[in-house]
Image (cartoon, rainbow, N blue to C red; front, side, top):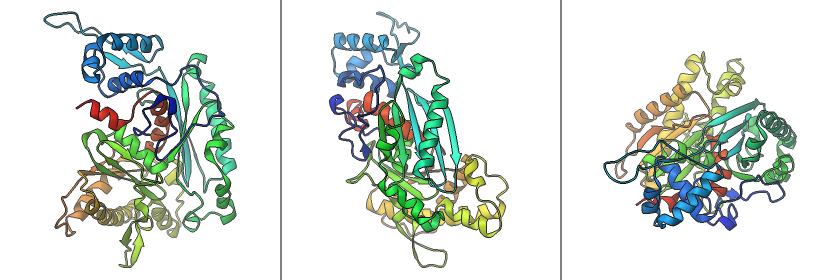
Length: 415
């Protein structure tokens, strides 16, 4: 999701690094793309719920009259709501303002190599509905059917007014889904079908609202930046352990997508294998490694994807995987921090929170065994968004494109 969307309302979504623009052929809801000053006000309120009109005028540099006009319009459109007036010692009571959760909704679609998830999220980031589907590998037709059926099921339970407030659907998917076929265990011809698929057009042809796209790990990083522990740090590296491990980079409180939108492709980082031979992080610290371990023991690895929040009864196998994952992560983190002096490294993934906590703890311990001379040790923290981070990041794409501002611009406004 991200907080890196353009601040020019007339070009919303067109110039973002790493984010595909909205599908122009899709329909549009009744709420228009907001003008810059309106987006500034909404963004300030989002970051600081409880601001009054006077607070917003002071922080934004806009005149009190301009702020008053804007906020009346935003209230009328159902995007802002008033809190209980707070009386001070002198003057008029301050009326705190907040985003109205029901003001805007958006869909977020996560396409993974083992499962898909579709969520409906409200204006303040609360997930209102979620549907999931596990599979051995994704195909374009199966994803189309999942989206069509899931969007239909969720929207059928909304009122007509709620449906009119859907801003769009964001897609979080790995770039080049057809890669790493052997690791996934999928037929080459089936995965090669993705080479000819444009997800923006494919999904845009079956939904009546704008469509956006972002790399899945980058979207998860954006979710952590906005809804998780990201605001606590100016700069951080982010690792998300899914079927394959990936990541994201945040600099100066802004998601850095890179020249091709693939910054933070940590899975390709060189590490060493258990035998000490050169390898990539993706082959050492990904869930597919745990899959292979379970399969060799004659156990069904499908349970990892059917419910990513319930991994009980994995016993010693999970312990071994966590230990090896942590060792590889520690090496990767050291390498990343030798390039950029990150204040923190945040780790999350498609697994239960307690598993993530164990990985973070083991990674911290593994880093104490490495030579960090010349490198400032970063804080290694657990992500706060969890296994749904990719879908939540995806759902945020329409919101930031149409109603909110670029995080870096907003951050500067707050100084």
